[in-house]
Image 1: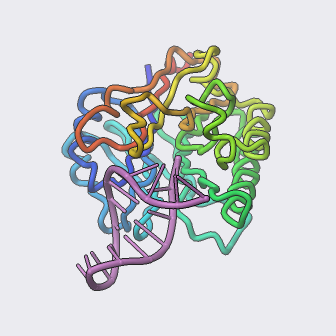
Image 2: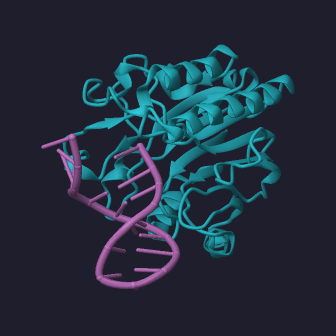
Length: 260
DNA sequence: ATGCCGCCGATTCGGCGA
């Protein structure tokens, strides 16, 4: 069995003790991190090595940044960044082959405030992502695209659709761009296994959102048909959101059977 | 209508996030 997890860590250095703890307790085969918020030379790769994880990462000064860690095997990088916009310098995408699976780690733009240039950037980024995912699909390989999508797919995926109605995360254009990925043949594993909704992966630090369980589901794992056939289970490590100095996101994960 | 909280990087505060 192979376990692939995604975790928006909100600062890999500020969160390092929590992150190492989570790796030791849940021991994912592959851990995809978003918002590492550091430059490449500041990434604490040696701390992960001590736990047996080898990593690749795509950092940036101050914000964004993504990484892929693998337990006992070095991820083989396929690429970083999305094609289609030479002006885009945000570190939001890294892709690798590991354990016989193509793994893409994404940190999709938030897009607030909307309307505006940041929302336009989000929608363009989603089209560029769709193009890359179509290329991966054409390879007909087991693949997962996991991370912070910054999209609330359905009203059942948010504590209060009314409170969030003006937010970029649940605008019809954001949802439509997300639904196109599903229409292309990708499976939202956690959505599939929780059809009634009510499962959150993010709780704001502000206004007592965690204590009130005011969250929403924006971290997703999308599986190619070749990998969806092997889906065993999936979940959210909600308890880790309750800890001291926690990220505002909880980790998400999928377990897939070994190739036949 | 806005801030709440928290990171980062630069200097006592702004940018950014969701």
